[in-house]
Amino acid sequence: MSRHAATFLSRSLSRSLSRSLSRVTRQFAGAAGLGLIASLALPTAAQAEEDKVFGWVEKATIEPWGVLVKAKLDSGALTSSMHAENIETFTRDDEEWVRFDVEVEDEASGDMVENSFERPLYRDLTVSGAGGRDTRPVVLMTLCMGGERYEEQFSLRDRDGMNYPVLLGRRTIQSLGVLDVRKTFQTTPDCGEDAPLHRYEDKQYSERIGAAS
Image (spheres, rainbow, N blue to C red):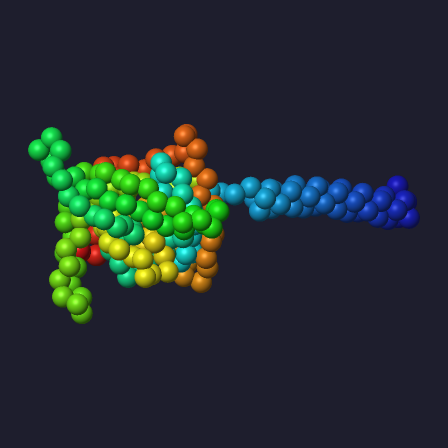
């Protein structure tokens, strides 16, 4: 083979090899790019399991009544509180019960509505403040928040002069998710009969939420 022919063959092989390598590189880059897009578009398992975010004021419904109220999420309180009037204790089947009325503004209609409840007395809560010591009955009530139902401890007191008829303390916030104090109204209370129900008896409190009070 002549020197000229050998040089020509060498250059042809070099160009062919270069085109093949370029084609493989483009295919690899395309596949990698698709993989990157897929990884961004599909949430990871960790992302899917992230806690819900709640603002410092949310709307909730008192179940099974269904009235829509504003609830303040207060990380400075441990036990949740609900507005109640005409509170009285009585005995039923040798157990202490509480009878009380709840009169609130229905946020859905703007009307004042009232309902009477009877619940077993869960415990008594003693609160110390500037006005002295105050003992309040605590009962279990159910709220719908963010499409799920939560059975929680609520101390009963007259909150008529306060902005929010329902206050949620750390006992309840722990069950809900993450509290973002920069935001409000992050969820919609929409609970049908099949909405998940978190029963109080199944709760496990974190030691980090503080001592019982």
